[in-house]
Length: 102
Image (tube, rainbow, N blue to C red; front, side):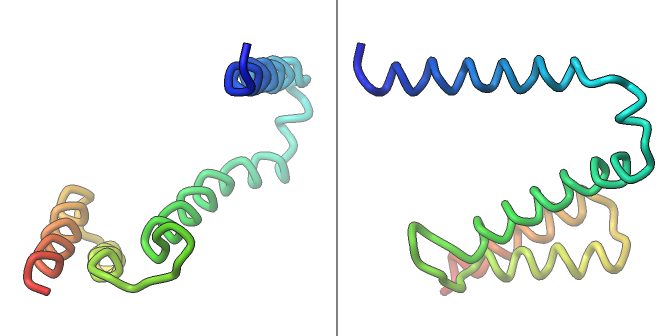
């Protein structure tokens, strides 16, 4: 068995243990208002970090390219309270247009 399979099995066991421990937490701990507030904000923070990393970096370099324009159009569309399909389409069209023209 090589190092890759040891790492794969090890991370699988750790992920299973984390999921099992999450189901084993008493319900009254999760009903606390601070815990509920934190749980509501964690997905937003993770998604924002993912969008930031995917938009402004490539490999180990920070760069500004067509993706920044697409995210900017998406932010403007969201501020104007556009429906989600319009936000996605407008940002994709903007990003593709700038990528093809420049």
